[in-house]
Length: 178
Image 1 (spheres, helix red, strand yellow):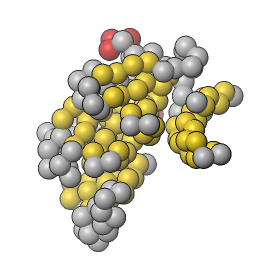
Image 2 (cartoon, helix red, strand yellow; image 1 turned 45 degrees about the vertical axis):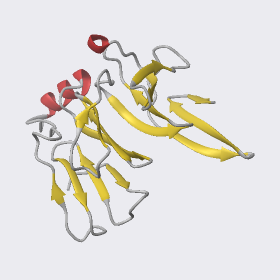
Image 3 (cartoon, helix red, strand yellow; image 1 turned 135 degrees about the horizontal axis):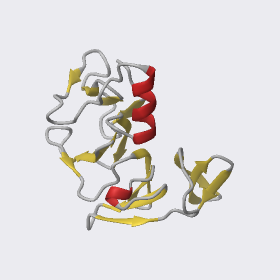
């Protein structure tokens, strides 16, 4: 497996998802002893670059870079596919759907106060700029929450600080929290 993302189902610790840049999505339902690969017709696989030049083109243009993040929010699993958008499954991975209007270049995800926060790269064709976007699962809407326009945010996490939850996002020399 060529994976950089892993998520354990909070409702069943035997269920583990691994997302890879070029080989797609895998799931284990027995704590990692056996793995099932999702067909690329369900969750696409990224395109393997054939040379360094092609890799650099993919990297700069965001073409088919595969799965960049896997995240659970309650009983729903979200998969961020760089170059295509965010998929979700609410039935333990039996079916998947691409979320309408999702950013096509997602990086990382976390939940915060009942909503999914996503860092992403600019995608002018889809109306998203660098920054942080918020998905409200109750009504299916996306809103911008980028604190600094044009800032590429990478990591995103939440924590509890003095009995209140806090959201942190990192970008180069800037840290944003709310």
